[in-house]
Structure formats: structure tokens, C-alpha cells
Image (cartoon, rainbow, N blue to C red; front, side, top):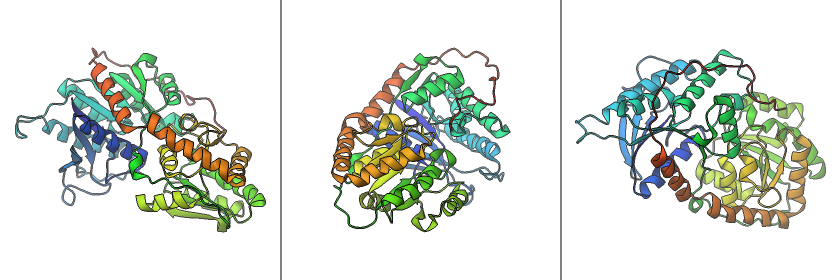
Length: 415
């Protein structure tokens, strides 16, 4: 098939797990014999004079990284305006793919949108080429904000998500919990949504057996520094862990809007010297930490999937994670890792102590987690399943859509 993917991030522009997901999916689809073009963007804050639209072939994928238009918008301050401007640039570049100037002109057989930020260009391009629109909903605005969509920007984002989901001919989610969330929030048919889990290429993650340690334990967190990631719960649990395991430290890798608050929280709990913020790690640095720490702690309060859980399993570090969303499906409690309820600080501390007190059992779970990756999370399986969604998607007859009914609280409360 000829596949046009639209994503607001694609390497080297990576904000979170979405960019890595789209990259792995696109390259695997190419290896499976499909033709893939990815519409993405140049880095934020650039312009067409310094960073013109770039066409490059990488791993068999034609990547079209579009330049920002001249109007000056800052994502953190003008998010909707910035998103609309990005969409306009993507539409222009997408339409150009079909013009005779590029050989005979390239026509996709399906358009695949990744999240709400590309709803406008994806919907427009699917209509322009008259092909099915498939969307992967990686997360929802309501989920990210514990059900609250009371602010003006929250409502705007939610309404765009609703529009994308309802205009799509097929929808993909990365976990069963996300499928439930999407059907409930956007009122789409259960049969229109397919669950396809994230994958991992284990060849890039060296597995290392744990060795006995005779020094204070090191705990690791990797991910965005946002409230829904629950890092505050790991910081709150650290004093309890240090009482039974003196000297234990928590190392936090990632960036986000909650850095200052989390740093203050560490001071409030009197563990500031035991908590380090390391910023973003490259692949080699991350692998070194995954090999060197005693456990990775993923305390999310909301998590559509959590690809870092797969990467941690591939590297062999014991997993301690909440049961939030997709994490509860990615980890089999007491088999491939230890789980606790979201926001349960005592449960988090107890699970960490269990890992530190029984290294042999933790090693057995780590080995089981690695073995499971080859069965359930292989990228070829993910790509083949996605291709089946493409093949079965039919462009439906479009009817005018009314505006969504937006309530302030769209999900059950999460503590």
C-alpha cells in the first residue's frame, strides 16, 4: 500500500514516545513492502529561511519535514494557533506530493493521523486524495487532566480530538483501557476501534543481568515531568524507602513543565539531596542507567501505554509500575514486574522494598519481562496488524457533524 502518515514529531524532532512509535512503525511497514511517506515538521522556533522544508529518504521512508510559516507563534503560549499554522504547512506539502512535478505524482491509498495536533491536515488530505482516514489516538486531553476539561484550551483540544475520532474511518489505540476511554469520550462505535500495542526493537537494547550490590540502591524514573506521570508519588515514597534502605537515591530523567514543582516537593519531603534531575538522556546514556540502577519506577496516574516499560524490560532492569491504563497491560504483576495502584504511595514504597530485598526474584521477573517482548511486542506484528486496519478501512459517506457536547468532567475522578 501507499501510506501517508501525518505526525507532529518524527526523528530528529522527538517530544515523547509518539515520535519513536511513528518512526518504528513507518520503517517496519517499509520492510514489509509498503510505500510510506511521513509528513512531519522542522524544529519548533525555526522558520523557512533557516530551516526550509526538507525531503529525505531514511530507512526507506520518505520524510517530508515542513518548514514553519512566517507568522510567529510559540507553542507553549499560542498552542492552538501554532497547531493550525503547522497544519496549514502540512496540507500544502501533502498536496504537493500529488502534483506532476514529482514524477507522475504520488497518491496515497490511506492517510494515517497520529493524535489531535495533526487532525486538520490529516482530515483535509484524506478528503483531497479521497482515501480512508485512520487515526491513532495516543492519549486524550481528558485523560491527561484527570477528567477535567473545564479550561478553554482543554475544551478546544477535546473538541478537536472528538472531531478526528468521529471523522476517521478507523481508529487505533495502544491499549484496551485507551479503547474504553476513546469510545466513552467521543461516542464512537466499539467496532471502529482496534487495539494494537506499541512495539519494541529489542536489538537496540542490550539485556544485562543484575549483579549483587554493596552500595545504596539507585532508583530510576524516565519520562516527561508532568503531573499525570505521578513522579510526585515516587518522591513522596522515597523517605519511607530510605528508612528501610538507607541511602537510596532517585534519579529522574526527562523534561517537562513540572520540574520546579517537583524540585520543591523533594525539598518539602527532605530528600532533595537524594533526588537528581538529569534532563533528557540519549540512547547510550539511558541504556547505561537502565543497566546501572536497581529498579525503574513508573508511577503514572494516567498512562495510555508507557513505552519506557518495554525499553526497561529489554534492558533487564526490574520494573515497578502503577496499574494506570496501558501500564497495567504492559506488565504482568509478580511475573514480569511489580505493580501498585495509581497514587498509592505506600504501595509504591512496598513494591520497591520487595525488589531491593529479593534480588534473585527481581532478576527472574526481569528475565520473564524480556522473554515476553519477543512474543507480544514485536514491531513486525504491530506493523502487520496496522496494515490490516488500513486494508479493511473504507472511506465512509460523510455527513455534517454537529459540535460535541463538552462537559467539564468527562472521566471518573482519579485521586
